[in-house]
Length: 307
Image 1 (cartoon, rainbow, N blue to C red):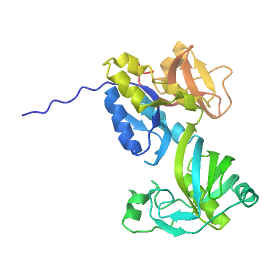
Image 2: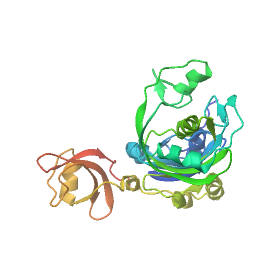
Image 3: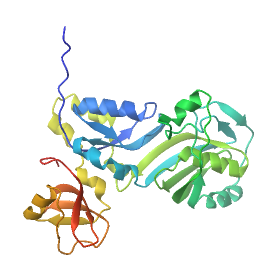
Image 4: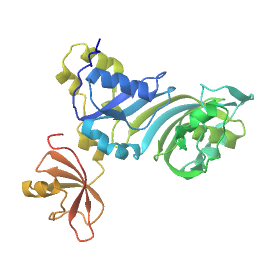
């Protein structure tokens, strides 16, 4: 007996999912992909099951530009428990050290100062960073520890929102590749008491704001109506992921050559770097790069008809 395949759709766009706690990013992706009946989808930047908040999901042609979201700055809200260290750096791990702790503001504030700007971080063994093709967390669960090199990350903002004797609540704006669990652990070590994450929420990614997010519950309620047109209203255009790139508008003739892989001259274009290409005035074409002679070369274009 043959199994009937569920019909899927070729849709394009970006969904800013407000991922709930207690499920993995991949599980959330699969739920969303099913609700939209999407043929192709991927998320950008995993959130731990413990964490909630912004998880951009790219559909169809948008997956070509997911790297720009992966590399974007992020903003987080986090609660750290002082005086308790765990195997994973968060509340899901086993306690490995514990001590009574009472940290004053006078002790905390100078320590926080040390973690602003460019800092060095050693990725956690419970991160998704890969070693020989395997995520470190898989090795860690087998009791295997791999030497990890420190890497430079930038903490743009580190704001103390609330403090008790043994907890700190922070809002953090940081560069790509920053591990918030590691940051809280390092702050705890600098205080001499240890620490781990008890709550974590991603507030934003790149230029996307918190009020643009949609919950799984909202999606499921709309999906129950059986009207994909209503569901698709939650999708943002592909070029919304490229808001930080200069916009270069090209003519019909220019688009013709770009779509065939040829470089073109565009009056008043930037003199260097990557640009967002649009056909007058609102059809997104993809990403181009300014060559040394001033021409615009196509680098990553969407398929004809996608938007």
